[in-house]
Length: 126
Image 1 (spheres, rainbow, N blue to C red):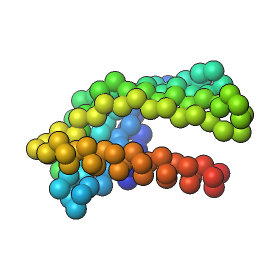
Image 2 (image 1 turned 180 degrees about the vertical axis):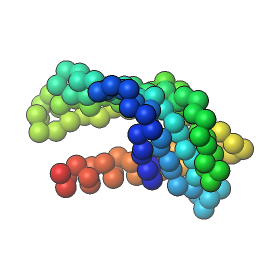
Image 3 (image 1 turned 90 degrees about the vertical axis):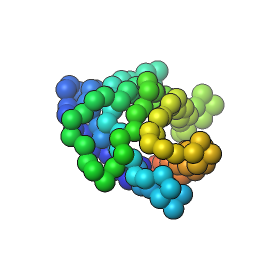
Image 4 (image 1 turned 90 degrees about the horizontal axis):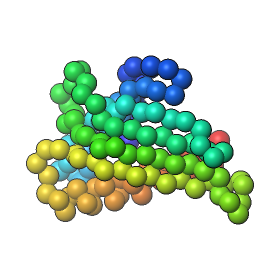
């Protein structure tokens, strides 16, 4: 993920967010943007965040608009160690465009590994 912008804020836990990603695999996969409705609430001493892509009229020509089917992230305290959390994500992304499936599989795997690595680094700094 290269950027995240709140496009519209409805109430405390509810908004529309635009995410962008860089090109992958030497730009075989072009940069993408996703516009999602997001709802986040407290859940069992943690967080539950659900999302779904929505139609958004503003499109930027340098990105291909991807689509996220219903997805969710759960972050809860680790039962055995209250100083650690368990983050579980359920995603089903359609990158759209003409991309070989093998390239999609490779890009998605490396993107998720990088996401979790970057998240861990950011949390260690906090």
